[in-house]
Image (cartoon, rainbow, N blue to C red; front, top):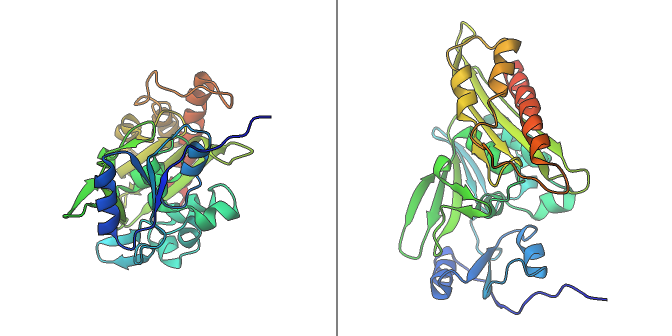
Length: 292
């Protein structure tokens, strides 16, 4: 019988973001940050990831919080899914984020997994990347010398790849206030065992007083190598009254940005994912419009 044993690595538990950044710089891309660990540790155990070092962020104080202000929500990167799904502040300011967090995996994972870990890992089947894309978030990242802000539109690059540099730590997620008359929704076709998204769609839709779509952001996860905005869907929606026919026509373009890059694995073929992207985009949009 063979067993999966991780390759040897160094373990560090810094007490500050600056210390974590210095450690990242020391290993020059050879280290991995450990947040909740539910995504990274299985990869390490199976030797699909073989980092020289793991840098555990759990001992850094001040990275778990939810704050509301005039500029919207500020959420610490180490805030758990459970803290998000149970936060009255999140439910009021960005209900789709609370709804999506409640759909992640199971109770054990939601009590340990973190928002920042999910975004930085950029798992193609993760729920939260699509939601923060639809919400138009900004991400604050730090190095030992300073910080910068990355628009979520520029953050997800490829399979398990983001705009984070090797010496940067994601510290905060900022979500702008939702305009009046905005409805939101996240729906997914979940894997029965893991609850990962085979396909998931997040929709944020704003209607004017005449019922015409003034703004829309739609994002898809699970279907391709990373979460993407469905910009062609958005363009069809904006400026129109969102009848069932318009929503259906817009949903048919939800996979356009993925093109020929639909995932195909033991859970679903590329063709099935393409078809389900349309189905779940229509459901998410219909639900979001119904919540305006």
